[in-house]
Image (spheres, rainbow, N blue to C red):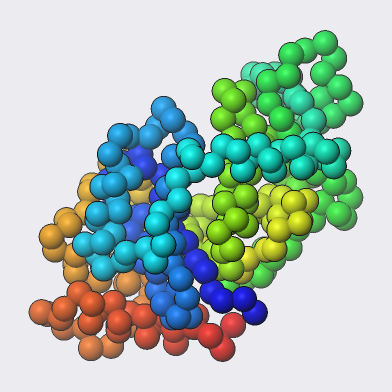
Length: 297
Ligand SMILES: [Zn+2]
């Protein structure tokens, strides 16, 4: 097996909050438990949502929490040529087609389909041509029948199965605003960085089958996956900037680290008032290793 390489991939839409700290800590602990490399990728493709200075703020907070990346961070906004090359490769393979549907047209046709109690996936309207419409997005053709079923064994969530044809349909690789779709960027970035293990929030569980299919189409290896339970607010919604998550206290990292470890179900041996940050992280790494380290697989 190739040497372990993991990553944390925050969106710089604001300061690091507790929900994203849990993802950062889980991926960092897994890398340390495997004596591997831990990288950070700034997912700043969504220009309008990106807050100036937020990425540097997140990196500073991670450092204060004892988690500094082992290599310089990668910025998605600087990797346009790599995504274009991947789209060209898929297009040359006949796997991509232009779609002229607007969001409203898709919603209308999905509503009609829903009333017939059939699929909610993109209905494939443009598979056989644009029918005189202008190309808006570029979609990846997903297979029909059994070939559409993607199964993977998640290290936390266990066996996962998704039927790409019925659950998702042909999905967007390049959006109507000209921006690269999240799924394409993540797959290209993970492959280029040689990522062997993806550890992230379970809100991305639903994206994983699409990413595995894209890896296969591009001839890229599939990493091991581990999806940790997301942190929810009192309304049961995922904690985010939008749901009012507050920024972390940078100068006092232990309470938040302790809460994040507890969210991950870790029994950190030797934790006591006054424990040093790095001693806590070392003990947390041992706790993670007992559950998810080499040989526990
Ligand atoms: Zn279409």
